[in-house]
Image (tube, rainbow, N blue to C red):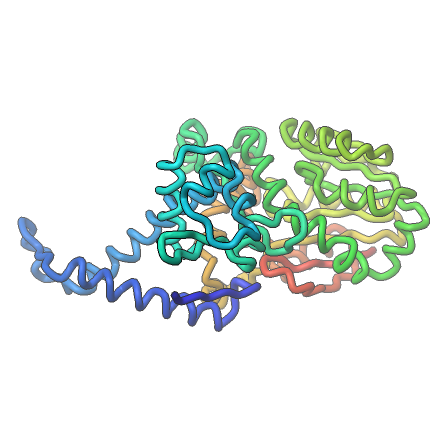
Length: 397
């Protein structure tokens, strides 16, 4: 079995692994299509038959990805991955019994996961290895956990609205994208926020940890489901934390999270980033993966400038990109990021007439620096903290 893995979506090693896997799949595809001929279309006779077959294979691999994505979501929601973690080889009956699910459906799911290379298959039994479990099952302790990002597809009414946005030029707000969007985003960003924020991200910022330990005021703009801010509030009980987000669904999730954790030094407010009060003298303002979602990020940047303390820090986290499509093509997951953009980020960034429409990849380092300088900030430091998808910018007046 060929196995390829990498912590970064942009490494050459992973690209080579993907290419090796693709070559193996192409050979199988050629066998399947060896007897196919073009009939009924005179123009087809002028085409390179092999090129058409190979392009057809590429297209169908994306359809396969759609189906495998749904299967990952089912495995996550049904607890199949977590049940199989650390238990070695299991038969279909053993998995069904352990999860109290119907064996026939479990068997089909297991076979599909093995076919996708997400489970190991040995002599009729199945295993979730430790490596696989780190990505698919270990939500609490693994920075590599990814299963929470899979949502099982997009509601038909949301797809219809996305179609309409292409005609009108006006996209959907995160609120209009439905509660699944907020919940899915919270789980997708959760592991890194819980496990890396206090140990890796905040210590990289000049003097911030000392302020938080002594008692600082923090504002998390675009707080979503509150995963990151709740982690910070728990780690630094002397600090006062405020989270703002325009989505009522996200704020509801955040409030429930804070209540479940018994946090008294945190509050969440339904509001936009441009609505934070001037003169608040925040010691730390955080915007994680949200500035590119805003129709008018310049307004939020200006509001941050008026609300931050003179010696305060703005921690701006955003997607790794260069602004140069040809360079970004080295990222084998680039198509996924553009998919995220069309379906969600760009929708939000175009949800108001005249919106700047940055989209998922629009706030690269140069654009972020320009945005902060226009708002009146003078210091802009880039931190690469081994986060495969993001860079971190330390911004000061």
